[in-house]
Length: 83
Image (tube, rainbow, N blue to C red; front, side, top):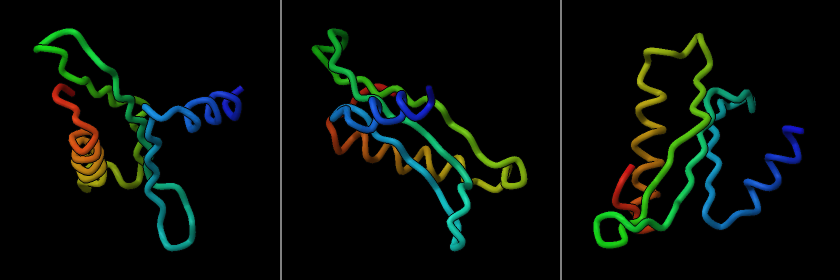
């Protein structure tokens, strides 16, 4: 089920899957960004950040904040106005 959902999300042009890995390829954190056209604020594009996960041994070290900053920057690049 997860693999089917992953492929469906990955195929969508309004979707971005973000993964942070270390030098060994171990997944440290994940996040999903969805870009949605909206009707509020004169048709502003909305960004939904979902599925944020940070490995428990790395929580509190700003990795989640850094991922969020980079994801929001990418959303803005895609003309996102609301997060």
